[in-house]
Length: 95
Image 1 (cartoon, one colour):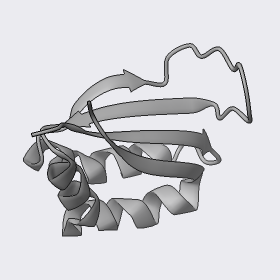
Image 2: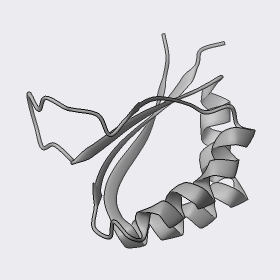
Image 3: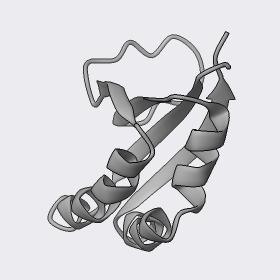
Image 4: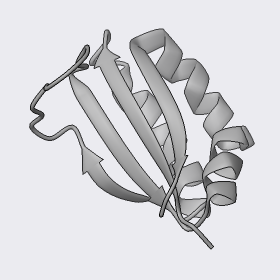
């Protein structure tokens, strides 16, 4: 079974409010086996528009990645994130 990956690109608008998103999202990540591979490290923008924060999260499967996103816990976190940051989020199936 192929692993699933969230790739998120984020510009935080409200740094004081962002920790609320992180703490609200944590239970969903823990329940669905999320492993953070990259979280806000140095980037090298080669093509296209860059965002200030880039995150790659590995899940045991694409279904786990989808289930995490659609979970009640994460949907509560989405509302917070959307109010404190501009972002894009995609799920990619691993090789």
